[in-house]
Image (cartoon, rainbow, N blue to C red; front, top):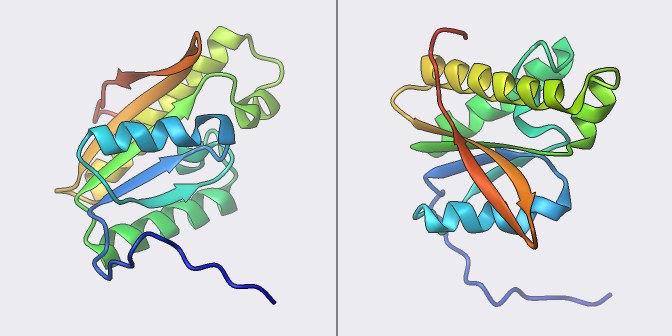
Length: 155
């Protein structure tokens, strides 16, 4: 049995930021770069197919919604999270499967709505944590992140 020892030193303090995003590996490095440029060198991460979609009952089943909200709430409460960043992305397979009869434009509209609903839920249940919402899309050889406005009217 072989052993690998990481070069990065262990830091026992919990990060103050939580990133919730889709597990599509095409976006992983770019999402982490975004968070690092926002001043978060270390992150707690919830990374599952659809990411923030699972925080909205319209795009998640009830059991997935409950599991995601429970895990998210635990991390925020137990780790003292101060910043939460939600990221959805263009061409998400979770959304293509869930909304297979919708146009690409309607799917993107749904993703934005899910981000806002998830953000509003987080803001109403986990104040005073700051909430940031982003929609990622390939832009040539890079990934562009477009901020989505948080509206608290829907929770």
